[in-house]
Image 1: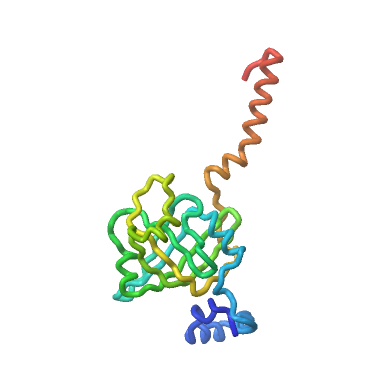
Image 2: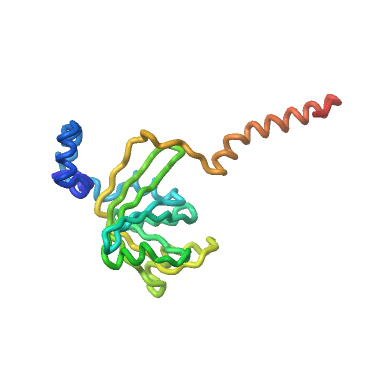
Amino acid sequence: MTSRYAQLAFTPTIRQLQEQWGSRELYTRLDEGDERNHRMSARETSFIEVRDSFYMATVSETGWPYVQHRGGPEGFLRVLDESTLAFADFKGNRQYMSAGHLQHNDRVALFLMDYTRRRRLKIMGHASRVELSDGSLMNKVIDSAYPADVQWGTLIKVEAFDWNCPQHITPRFTEPEIEAMVQPLHDEINRLRTLLSKNGSAL
């Protein structure tokens, strides 16, 4: 058995290039052992549940790839079970690129990034549209506290996933993360201001 991700991603041409450029031996370990990287564990679930964005790639009927950014409140990409993801699709610029592609080819590839900790989770799956009338699913993905119009839901049956190394992932920080890092500096400034004020000095 093998890594399910390697089964899907490493086509014969790719394996040939790995041989040519000397990396095939490195990846032979993915062809060994029980089948894996196809059922999400607690590690993948906990990572997904705190993401507030991801990138999703689709392919048109003419063969051109397209990558779309999806954003929302933290955890808007829901883990329904070990092999199923879902999210509410918000109304945007109404180009319907991904929606159109999925009518011809339901394959998707997702990149989920944690820039702060330089981690990246790649997911391959099959996506399908879920109408708003399907309350059994939509009630699980709609966040009534988030101010956005939901057009439909998207269900993803996960085929495989893989974690990337942190190489070349530039650390980036969110506004709340930066505020938490500089808060001790603000506290110290306020303490010193108070101390100077008590001593009859001012900045």
